Image 1 (cartoon, rainbow, N blue to C red):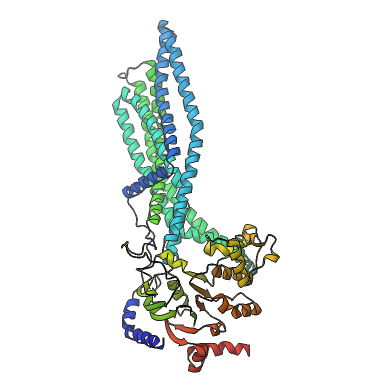
Image 2 (cartoon, rainbow, N blue to C red):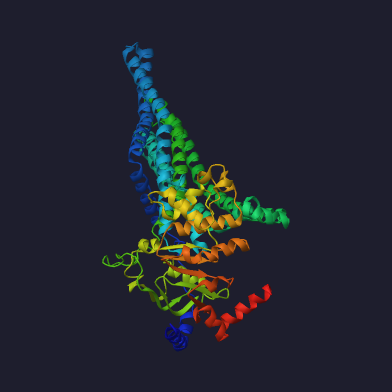
Length: 633
């Protein structure tokens, strides 16, 4: 290993120029926000979203579309029935004709009104069923997508902006798209029905209506897209405002906020961001409304002009019934026109949401390591016979110029207990992330018994080979048994295995819990709260419960009292028996238990050896150890 360390030093020196060149430019950040899309492309994304929601909930969607179509046809049919009914009544009054046609048309009219009312009752149930199903499925697609992304993306604010845009409207904009389309179809049918009446009287009037409608459609669709564009630009500001508010109401931050008397400061920051976003959106909405109402106002004036023309022009000759529905048509055509414009404006907003959702779902997935189907099919070696070898690994975080790891070379033998020490920022945690397969090196390779992480081992098989206790471990608000068993959820005789793991690390605290291992822990969900040390023991039990090939512990006893820490240390070798173990140690006492210690600095290993060897050498490790030891003398 000393030879490997010397080789690592030589490689680092030899490649210093290359590394400098490599770090001269920041590593590109992941691309999240889609470029500005034109109206046509957003319209195509709208069609994509419509096809998606129809695919996930076809039955209620088709029934809803059918009832909406019936509802849209009933109105123009009733309009023409009204025309014939009035003509029949006039005939009876003028020439004493038969009442049979009157009763016939009246029956048809009542039947049409009944169908219209019946469909109006059924529509809400079908739309609710569709929206519930489609909204749930769109939410599921976003939730399923997130774990498939590279964790590098989680380090960038753009990820959270895009996630919010995709997630915030899954139960509204997605399902509502069919309602908006149905509104257009329903009112378009009414528009056509009224238009047919106008065509009978004078085709020029219909042509004017069609022209005005076309202009209104464009203004409404473009206006909706502009409003959504403003909402998209505001995503970060809205997230920041929510963060300021959450500091006051979150259990983990409320104590410090109260201690430092931050209430007014945080409320002022929230208020400023809220109203800045609100006012910007309101200005855009007013601008769009002025355009929309302008075109609608022109349509109203045109309708008044058409009515005046019909009433005064001697060239218009029609029956009383036709005059009746004609006035209804000219005045009534404004309602479906307005509703179409309103629905199209909402569709414009939905097209912006569709573009954001599609861009998020199309983000490259981390698990797609290779286009070659013959690669990434191997399992992680079990048992690990030789060990893990890291060769010339360099890694830079997106947006940074300086590599976190630089030409790193090291070996970890199978079954070896290795401690990793070094100052903050020396690359310890980054190395662990690459070792666990969570991040991928920019260059270099990591081999497990000769199998390459990148080309040979299937990603999920790689994850299953490790268990870890991170410094910022998760406190799951779940029953104690489930909290421990999450690391290996498909386990036979789970109850006995959970108990054994808890006893091993001193996390068997069931005597103090009302329902033993079935007790819900975590006050946010109404459970029992634990001390910091108890939570850390639960995290340790979860790691050892997995029975993995390699276990990684990042300062595993930081929250434990000295006696509990000593008990864990004394049993460490027993707990890690038969496994390869890595410990990131800030308190160097635990490093004495390791077979070998690796000292990190500047993203590479600068010293390695046992505790006694490193003390004798009097290098960086010895200096750190002596600095800590002074406080205990």
